[in-house]
Image (cartoon, rainbow, N blue to C red):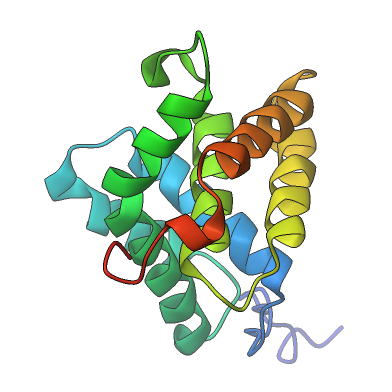
Length: 161
């Protein structure tokens, strides 16, 4: 048998050039979740490390990173909205999975005009089913519904964005 044609290097998966909205949301969530366990100075490195392992071309990785940064930069505005709407729940007591999924949804509802509100909520609930506990979907849906009641989208002005 001739071993000259046998490669010992495994074939690499071809890098993907496109990402769906669902995948973008999911990778944004994972990036927020992972970086939340690190000090501010380490977060960018951790985000980049996670993204570099994904099977996407660098341009798509940059798109995920940009969305992560957009959400992260609004946390100071988003968390008080969630906190006020989560009666009886201190933000520190909310699970990191649920909190980060709600952060993304609130960002999409109030700061991304391209995503319909219902889609943002439905996606957070679906990702809650995948990554959260048994009660996560109902919890996420309830808090996001309360956020919508407390903060009608027209109440968040452009200046505040």
